[in-house]
Image (cartoon, rainbow, N blue to C red; front, side, top):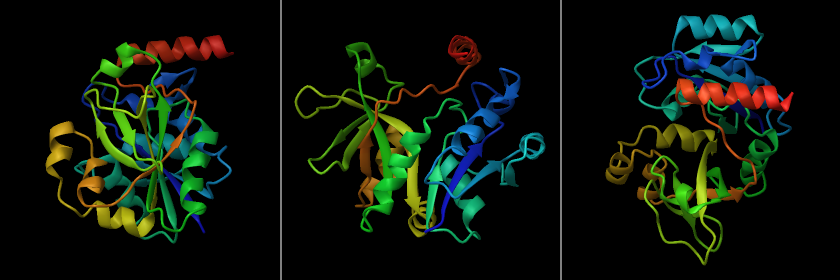
Length: 238
């Protein structure tokens, strides 16, 4: 089954315009994401879904396969659906364009959820929360799961958990292509609009999202300050 990883590279970020092209260690940030994605064993192809000519030009300059999508599209999922609608593939993976240190093994684990179980239409990753401050932080999306590892709910607010283990959601998804195209045609749901979390549209429409637990710590670049932290992390890692 052909698996395509798609990096939605949105230029017009509200808090950090042009961040996907921000210099990180001498490379545009999206190039770091693309290079990590190409290390994934479970991806047959990696595609960058652009919304601006400068992003397309940069992606092509470092050798990536890239396509233009409508800048007016509302979400990363919509951009990915537009990018793959004419591709022959069975599974599509949403790899965030603002996570330059994405863990290839975590991507592979999320894809494996769908490869190993034909009933799974959508999968994602969660990580144990390490502190009470993180649990209370509205910028950290919390996830509670059922006994089979399916997501019951996602929230920016603290939510009840099984025992003492609390999980946060990582913005990494794998979908069966037909389910992705169907899901992105549904209208935004009420809980989705309240929480500003599009994955709730799936749950509200009665479908399951399978989760896998990872130890990988996400580092998303949302602001110029985040970029400075990433620069420091990169220097330290070298």
